[in-house]
Image (cartoon, rainbow, N blue to C red):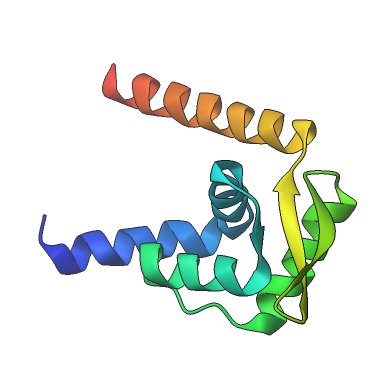
Amino acid sequence: MDEDSKKELVQRITRNLLDIQILRLIRTHPMWGYRIKKQVETRFGVKLRHGVLYPLLNELERKDFLTSQRHQQGGRTRKVYSLTRRGREYIEIYEGILKEQIERTDAK
């Protein structure tokens, strides 16, 4: 597969499963919104607008997948997001389902 096709698939998966990709990023370590935005752009090549990111973060927090705390840094206040136990479980379920689907498809 050529690099353009691979890049297109990564972007498609990221756009369609943005909530899960964001949870997976935050699982590695807590992050604030701008850092999440930059990580998505760097890792997946998907431009992420603030008008998409912050409502999604708020929704994930309402679902108890994320929690946030305000941190002061250099005179600025940042809202730092962390994964909750429920968020970890959600990712584990997703990864289990994905693995099952891949194995089921490969067995045919």
